[in-house]
Length: 216
Ligand SMILES: N[C@@H](CCC(=O)N[C@@H](CS)C(=O)NCC(=O)O)C(=O)O
Image 1: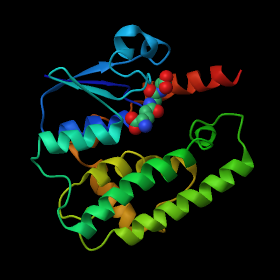
Image 2: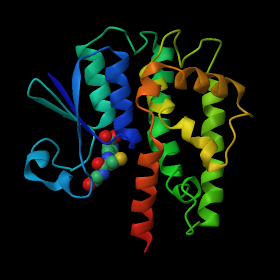
Image 3: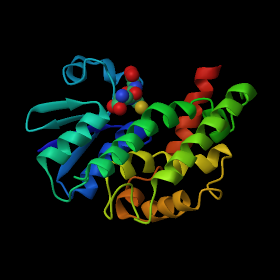
């Protein structure tokens, strides 16, 4: 049995959740309350770095979302989510890494915009906006005449980038200047795995309360 320890709002764990759904695997979800449960000995035994997501597959522990996705791809190869062609594989891996290392950090100052918090740092927001646009242009250039990154079929790159990009319009950055990215994003969010893992207004309201309490 596969168990995913996660938090629905986290893009880091949502990308693993979507992978499990897109692969059609049987799994159970355990929600971890990041208000302290991640430091309990039973969770630290799975991930000593106290982060979600963590996946346990028949007693085998895997941490780090990208490592978990590669594990799932190797262990459950159908449907294939990594291209074999060298350039296509490079595209997929670049998009994954740029999503995690460039795009996700640029969203930190944007939390105040997304959740309309009083503490907006105008300079940081300007820098983040520029970074987000650079990433979107990079993605636009990497999408060719195929519907997904480096493939005719859904790849791990689509899942990693596709669990972040739908948030961008909430930061004030429009996708309209990036027509391929916009069409790709619309295609992804229509998929059942995206719909099933979408955050609810209640989750967003709870997260906003948490952010407000951290600021005070
Ligand atoms: N590089 C990790 C990042 C995981 C991560 O930062 N998880 C956050 C939630 S989004 C977390 O568990 N925070 C709680 C903590 O660090 O105590 C991955 O991709 O899996």
